[in-house]
Image (tube, rainbow over all chains, first blue to last red; front, side, top):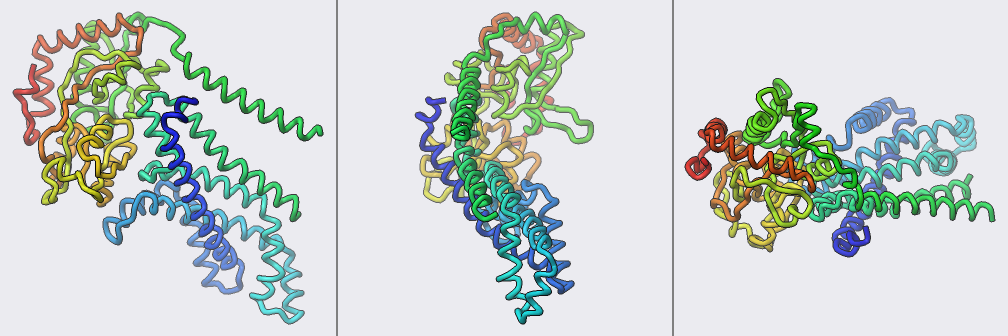
Length: 212
Length: 278
């Protein structure tokens, strides 16, 4: 295992970097897109609710690999040329955003409806009530399940390996076939994934304790 | 205090797991058994073959069976080793999975477009070459790239398959090109079709299969390496290894080999039948 780190340190480091970069981009946009659709699901406007529902059901129920391959193969053929890394990150963002939307929605709906009525009665507009009263409470409720989604997202970034996105898993495959030591290689890769996900997991725990 | 201790304990448990797993990887070939003897007892040889490679080993969707030159050759060799009633069982492998599967005994031998190289020969035993391929490139018809030299510039993207020898070679012949390694040949071909790369590189035999299926793409520039395919058996299986070599010789001498070459390659554009026959 040590020899793998010595001989392929550069490759593993690039892989770690690409995985981290993809995860950060996907996490950022998935959280934003997910929150938007979660709010759309809870507004009184029926059209907005239907749009959000369709989006969530489509991306939540298609395998991540299929979404990614769509962006890797179909989009470059007919629309615009995008690299493997980009298509993987887009796929991961859309896929994760659907799950985050469902998580956040459950948070919003777990806030007592009386709170919304109370805020409206006190003269806040719908969006003000959402922004200052409902969402802060909703996000606090959903920190544990959101943490799960974030960790899943980091692990799911291994989809990049299928579209030559140079991530950790891709480098793992390359190193394993080059060094012919598959076992130690994948152990190294597993360890590096742990280095990414364990701090995230502990940070989410810490947040949970601090805010709950 | 108790909490800290339990945390330290957890870390230790993880470490021990990792270290012991790591130790396993060094000594997994410990259990010695005679594969040939076992095969004779069960009257079956288990071959690892490709299932995504036209002409060599391709899964037919209609009846879910793998068909190709290697599959037919493996059947012929099984009959030579085990007798008329010997059964050949086929397990599909990829360039990535074939070595681990052989090492842990899931397959007895690899016949999966595997080039004989010195590095691989340290891990497995190779028989004589049963097919002499060479690396070439496949491009879209009308592409400005005419041979491998045309790929040696910044911005050129070459597609290959993870674990194949050809991705190592292309770095020598076109060091300035960027190499993308995909998981299998159909993925690589899909990527070529969707414009993710300028050329696809691997052994000519496999590329010919692709150009038959996709008339819009052709093999250009001829071969630039020699890639002899060999049958791999696990280290320390001398009896099986010798039986394979003998069976290969018998299949070649009986003319069966040439029949199989004709069956699979006679209608391939640009294939050198005379050079391939034995």
